[in-house]
Amino acid sequence: QVQLVESGGGLVQAGGSLRLSCAASGGTFSRYGMGWFRQAPGKEREFVAGISGSGGSTYYADSVKGRFTISRDNAKKTMYLQMNSLNSEDTAVYYCARQGAGGDYSYWGQGTQVTVSS
Image 1 (cartoon, rainbow, N blue to C red):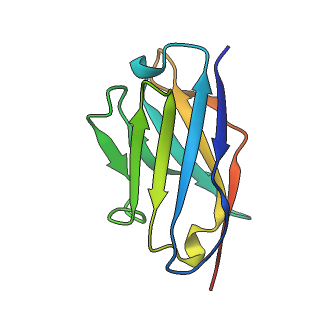
Image 2: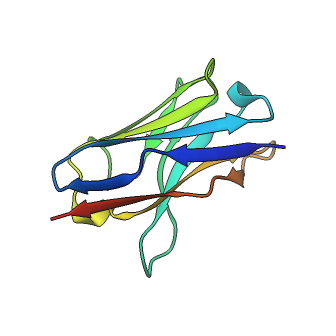
């Protein structure tokens, strides 16, 4: 049974930084791509960043490119999202997700709240 647990969210001032973590258990961590998504109040959940199983390939939404960095430590079975230059539009619940065998994001964490005050 795959379980994902996010941590690191909180309240930060505009221009500040936060690092989110996603700890995984169950399954073969390094075999699958993973990603970060977010959902702001009243909005659809949106893709933020993705990373391949090896960590060699990364992908970003245009809205976070140059400010956020996704990474993973396969030995620790943990994925990270370093978020810099945060602004109010980054306020959302952030979810980590793992791809399944078919490539879809099949496993999700419970989410962690990020609130950016202006």
